[in-house]
Length: 121
Image (cartoon, rainbow, N blue to C red):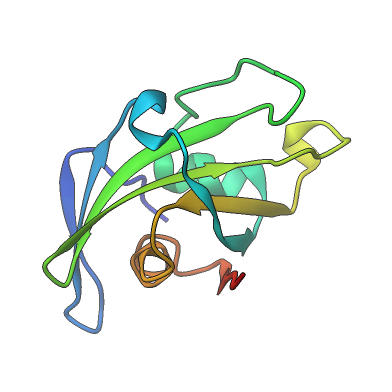
């Protein structure tokens, strides 16, 4: 398994290209839950690197903020442990925040060994 280099382009075995870049927390204000990821903290670190935010507030302990360009569209997403009551290294279900559920398909391309599912309101 290789770590994604932030500011890089990934081409999957199905010839789908996803570009990944870091974002600030402020660029995701007013985002909402668009999906979930079933995997370990270590898998996320192995693929995405260390989280950008480990502030340990009351809502989440760790956060990744990413911009993904996928099939000509750009999506802003966050991956976080929403209100988990356990240590983040024990979390197995992660939330995906964003502005469009179409971004979940882009997340699937960068986390191929995780169970990624959309969340519909």
